[in-house]
Image (cartoon, rainbow, N blue to C red; front, side):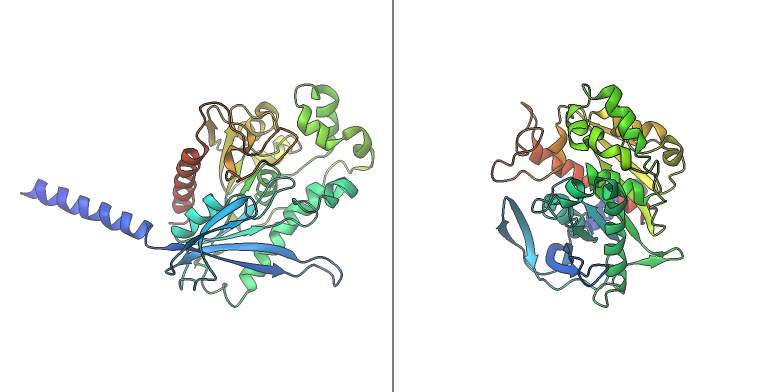
Length: 338
């Protein structure tokens, strides 16, 4: 009888946890974060958050939302998760992951990086020496704005360390969240890497254009660490610029994903380099995956230096993978923010 009762209680607990995990829908709204100066452009931020409002499927350009537009947020969220897209990307390109986190109680702030998005490439084209410095600063300014926003600041769960904040990023966004965690770029590493390995890492070195840009770059930038960020997930991060010493000093909880067949950022120079130098390596390999496996599948062909963003290797099921990935990332943040 005792064993039966224990089994029944365990089953009930499992059902309650499952019901809680799916208690919310994903809400969505867009806000603007003011620039640092009067003439600086505002930063567009898509907010995904838990709501009780009914969602609907809506196409936004090449991506699709399944969310309650402007639905009323719940009173409390587990944490704020900053989401940083890759080079030339969009705040909508990781909506599957953001919506999953929202349904599980998180507020996700996905920024459109000023000067590095699908509409505007001016940051890397006109000021490559500022690229690795400015991206993390843009992310921190969005965190500043959300934590100060009367509509959100009291909704974000806090503890003895302050408001709970994490970060999630892909590609250049993976670099961005690593910098927020304390990893530091030494831009001379890019020049040395591309002088020696351009044929092995051709897409990255083609984007970096080291011959033209690096003579004016400083050897290292000041720390870009954001002490509020306590957990990060870096998906196929651009990592070659980061120093081994700074990676070894990263203290926030960290999870790194590597696409096994990544040609955009060859793993041994980027994701694997990052993971091998972290104090607690937490590397997840995604078999038979290309670089864009971590993005939503666009409804149309989107060109990139590595071909169509919508394409997948034969046999790779991106939709199934994203569902699995969403579960793993949610569990990671749940463990960090119990």
